[in-house]
Length: 368
Image (cartoon, rainbow, N blue to C red):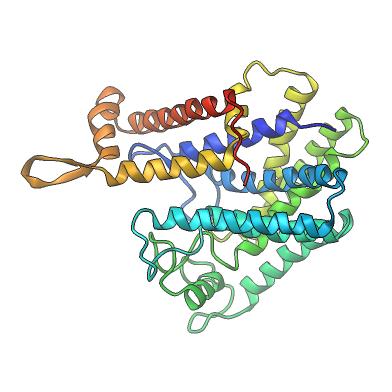
C-alpha cells in the first residue's frame, strides 16, 4: 500500500484548524465553535490536537513499514525515533522561549513537547508489541490514568477533584516543574505530565487504525470498519463521560476515546472520497499543508509571536502590537468584531498555505 493522500489531506485540514483556532484577530471576539471548552465538555476546537496525535500514530505505522522494507533494524528505528523526539521537544522549547529565553521561567511543556513524548512512547510500544499488545497498552494507559486521577489524594484537597488547579495532574506539575508552567495559569498546564499518559493512548489509537489500513481487507471493508469503530468509540467515550468527564485540559480517558471516534469518522470520510472515489479537486491546499505539517506549525508560531512583539506607537506614548493594530484598523472596521477576528484568522491560514505552496512546488519537504 502506497502513500495515503487522504492521510495527508486529513493532516492538512488539522493543521489549518490549528492555525485558525490559534490565531484569531482578537481573543475577546471569537465565535464559540472556535473556542476551547471552558473546562468539562468539548467544542470543534477541542478536536484539533487529538486529531494530530491520532494522525501521528497512523503515519508512524506507514513510516516503520517502509523502513523495515529497507531492512532497517529495530535499533536503527529506535535511534530514528529518539532523534525525532528530541528535535521536536527542542523546537517546542524554542517556541516557548521566543524571544526572551529566561531559563528561570520558561515553560518546559507544550504542544510540540507533547507530540514528542507521545511519539516516543507510542513508537516503543508499536515496535515491541503486536496489534493485540498495542490495544492492551492503549487500554491500560487510560485505566491507569483514571485510577490515579480518581483515587490518589491531593494534599489538602483530597481525591477525585477535577477542578482547575486542584486535580492530581496539576499538583504533580507544580511539584515537578515548579514555575515552568503554562503562562496563562501558572498553577496547571494543559500539556502537563500526567495527562500525557492518555494522550499516548490517543496516538496508539492512530497506530491501531494504521494496522487496519495496511491489512489485506478491501477498501470498502476498511471504510466500513473505521466507521463502525468510530461509532463504538463515540458511544464508549460518551458513557465514560458520565463518571470521568470529557475534558481537553485534563485529557481525560473519555476525551481520548471520544476524540479517537471523531478522528476515525473523519479519516474514513477522507479515505472514501479521496483514495477510493478519487474526488481530489479540492484537496491541493490541504496536501500542501499536510506534507510540511511540523514546518508550517513551527514557522507560523514564530511569525505570530513576532506580530505580537512588533509595537506600533499610539497617541500619548502608548503602543500596541502589530497584530492588534492590523485587527483594529483593517479587519474589525471592515466586517465587525467577531467576523473581523475570524477574517484575520482565515487570512493567516491563507498566508501560510501560500507560503507552503512555494515549498511544495519546489519539492521542499523538511523532515526531522
